[in-house]
Image (cartoon, rainbow, N blue to C red):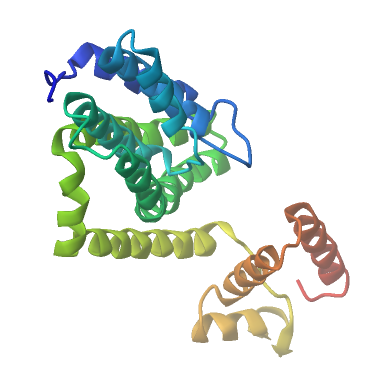
Amino acid sequence: MANEVIVMDKKLRAKIWWRYEIMSSAAFSQVKMMTAGFCFAMTPWLKKLYGDDQEKMAEAMVRHQPFFNCTPETAFFILGLCMSMEGEYAADPENFDPASISALKAALMGPLSGVGDAIFWVTVRTIAASVAITLAQNGSMLAPFAFLVIYHVISEPLRWLMLKYGYSLGNNFLEMAYESGYVDMLTMGATTIGLIMVGAMCANFVSLNTAIILSGSGETAQTLQSALDSIFPKLLPLIVSLLTLAGIRKGINVAWLIVIMVVVGIAGVGIGIF
């Protein structure tokens, strides 16, 4: 027998948004990662749905205890979607399988993390960092604030919209998005822009020149650097960036990579290479 459908108001949605905004990584562990924060954010909605029914409340809390990890921005969509499905289950428990909530939640973590990472961690964060680094190189104390403002001016409104539309659109939205190909297009576009920004940052912020002279002397000297620049400008910074990336992928500690760069740089200057 179906029950009365409970609708979420703006006040409750704002409360849930704040709870997940602040506590999404609370009690973070390698075992469950963002599970505790997700369950904490869901609690006011579950209390409204199940009231004093301790059995249903406990069942719902256990349902949201499995491993959860997703890009913070897109995780809000999953949060809204789960709230919508919990509402459907509370309204008609006989015709709604609660296992589908956990199943869909687990199924969306990977795809939405891929989309979220491409947009926010690769693209938005890189753009914000490039602006902040430029300010820092010029000695501006506004550099860290610029990074935070640029990133969060884009991130925070989208988190709110993700929660809102995840709840209102229901579980048919992503199925339509994948069938239309919009998700793949968005991921590819965001990844491409992010890689372009990374390449631009390597060219602008990684500096390496060689002092090797090929022929001549004084002002008429032909240097290896000028020859490289005529063929492939910024080739040496690109090589350093790619070697660093290769070292990171092989599991070399970043601190050791910095030490290697310092040692190679000092030795190179000492023997006249740099």
